Image (cartoon, rainbow, N blue to C red; front, side):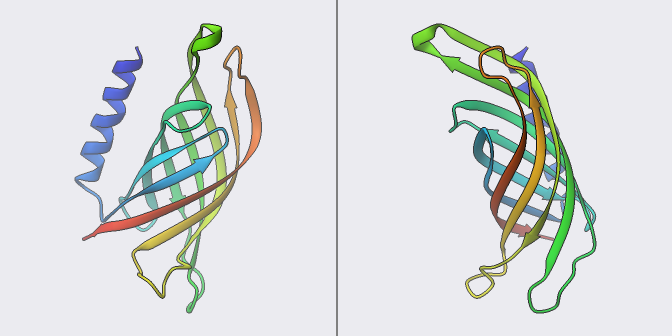
Length: 157
């Protein structure tokens, strides 16, 4: 089941990345998982994101749909957004013999901006506030989450 889900996410991201206007690779952090992220801007309004969180207490692989609102500001542009996230969370503690995987989801809102503009206009930073629900038996959480992301857009068509 876990391998099928991973293959499905990979196939979706590969097909979506082929039709992207912008493609960014970076880091996304939101309790309780953080890790590598791939973002594809399909249009100015619609973005998809895949997150592979292999570095936290709870590992995960998930996909996000992001709806971007109109950019505001001239000298310091900010793009507000809302997102919906779904994925597979895994908690593994070898010493206690715990290994469980469950489906989880989240929703939230945030802003995207470029505070590293003096260095490169390809860096994008996100700050977000959301709600996540993951029903692991030993590490159950329903929480308001604060997240941050940093992505480098290496494809700009």
